[in-house]
Image (cartoon, rainbow, N blue to C red; front, side, top):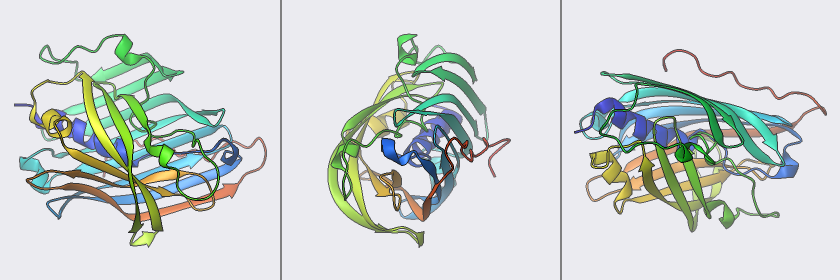
Length: 293
């Protein structure tokens, strides 16, 4: 049986990966400063069990993102309890985000996990991660740390199409993610178009992607949560546009099962895009410090 702290790491990383990031950016939209400020409710079997907040700031040549998440309640006995904070920053190169640093801190009632990574063109150059890996996990090889993205930058990529509407191509990709402990793929495919309404902020169309989770290394092969995510589970993510730009951001994540559905959905989804003076640095958000609230 896996420890709750490691379960918390996978589940809250999934939440952070799903929502604390921008998922499409056009090269010509990196001429000013764009901002995302959102909060999300985590529910299990329609019962609120957690919350998270996410911010993202884009300048002409740099970006920064941060997220905080907390989960417990009904999930405590089933999948996860814990708190987490994440941050990443890097440069924008040819319209694509290139992360240079990633940090995370995850706290449960039994263990604290800390990660700090330094990256260079998708390769891990420095890594400090605690606790150290145990012998019952699938070993992480050197190649597993190459050509990857961190969880927050995982869905941050250049939109392939121009024009009006939401691009289906945003869903057609595989995300090779390394979180400092585990290496896994998220495989996306277009599912449908839909409409959403936040309590505060956005209301309108979204593009919905199907998501499949493929564990590669750093995990215990037979733990319940890995099986829950990888064995025929129906996972979907809905992407909403940022007004006045060609940016998309996650609005909702759902994991459906015969027992109960896990849902992470925005209750506040506010964005803006303001032109900035040429050569000015972005208003980069600071990385979170200390334990999550």
